[in-house]
Amino acid sequence: MDHRGSKLAPTPRQVLVVPVEHSALSTQHLALSTWHSALGTRHLALGTQHLALLDYSQLPAVNASLNAISAVLLTIGYVFIRRRDMRRHRACMLAALVSSSLFLTSYLVYHAHVGSVPFAGRGAIRSIYFAILITHVALAAVILPLALITVSRALASRFDRHRRIAKWTWPLWMYVSVTGVIIYLMLYRLY
Image (cartoon, rainbow, N blue to C red):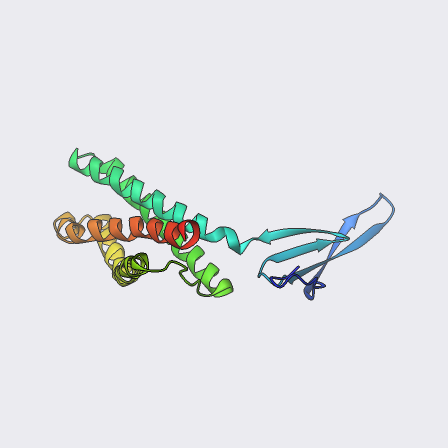
């Protein structure tokens, strides 16, 4: 069913023929087709059964989880560097970079398929939401090159230059990660 409640027949987009051994003497070919439902979910059909390959409606929760993981890793990485444990600090910060990169990929996939989701809150909470969203988006655009420069300086063992920029990168990256979770809660769970 689509979002209006009517039944839609799947429209095949691609057909893939895969040989399958039926017996020792013969080979059958099964036609696999994929289609996109009205809600943007990609399906795989095998005979009369189908399997959803990706449910885009789950990606906002995945994105929030990746942001939360990044915030936790950034916090632990900060604790490690304060204890002068560079090996563990490096591991946490690289893991935070991977988590943030996975977030960015998932975020772009979601919005490419679903588009913009309007905020349903009314009154003062709407102003608060947009204040958080605007600062989050602006700083997210800044944090990507800043994080890459910070990490590249550390990997090149230019620690004096790494420390100078990390003093700016860490709080901004933490803000973007935490506000990403707050935006998810406000947009998808609370209002």
